[in-house]
Image 1 (cartoon, rainbow, N blue to C red):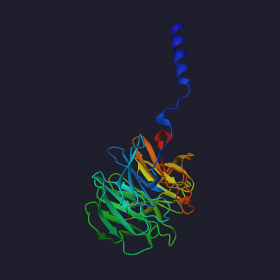
Image 2 (image 1 turned 90 degrees about the horizontal axis):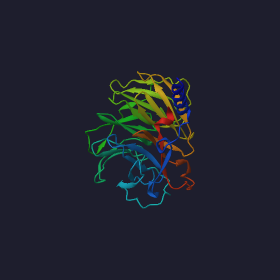
Image 3 (image 1 turned 30 degrees about the vertical axis):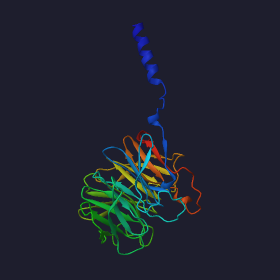
Image 4 (image 1 turned 180 degrees about the vertical axis):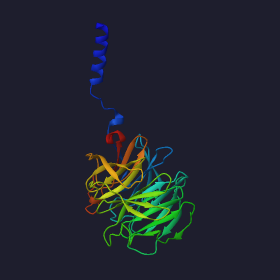
Length: 319
């Protein structure tokens, strides 16, 4: 009996020991080269976890090893890989690899979208939109299409994934008369989708309000977030029923639990790591959420904190 008590006490003592943080538990910063000036987009290859990021200034796309942080140039469409980060103009924002050797890129101020071949770095297609103003901001891929947001106009753009040829696009969805009708205010920013592509989730850039869009009926419905503070919402990532929202000016990431119909959401965790610097988009790589430190708030003054970086956050931080 005494021996049993000793064993039980030992087990109890072991269970009461504080958790010792490991490398996997820690937030890591992945430094980027200077040509990755003001990195706005970040995405992960779903098969390998390899990261891709791009410079808002130069349009250069980089491959990033999520473990070592080693980088290599995938594409330099404007020949600016060696340029200094002084040009105050966005030429590329959100991006997504499609698992078929291509990356889809939101073209920012010129109203274009691009498809780039990963192996060669060659641009395969350029899609243009007929009317400005433009800020083609983010992109999500579904099994059949790519959807792009325009933060300066009340519309959403759609490109079939098999339509890899230059084209002029017509709006797929106009928001006038829908729950997303915000007039001339800054409009949509981040966008994500369910794995089957049936529903999109988008965030209104100024208010942080979330909306569900049915890709079959084009119906727009507001998502009830219970008053969660999500203003300045940028990147969105959907993992099962958990939605991550990057709040740019707040420098934080909010996790919400979505209902099965995606019409209600409950905040479950809010973190504000010191490593975040005007964060933009985000992506899941393995068991980590990787966020792009855009620093776009420091671009006009030309005094970013170097090196530019991505921030890798363990998903366990949101438990």
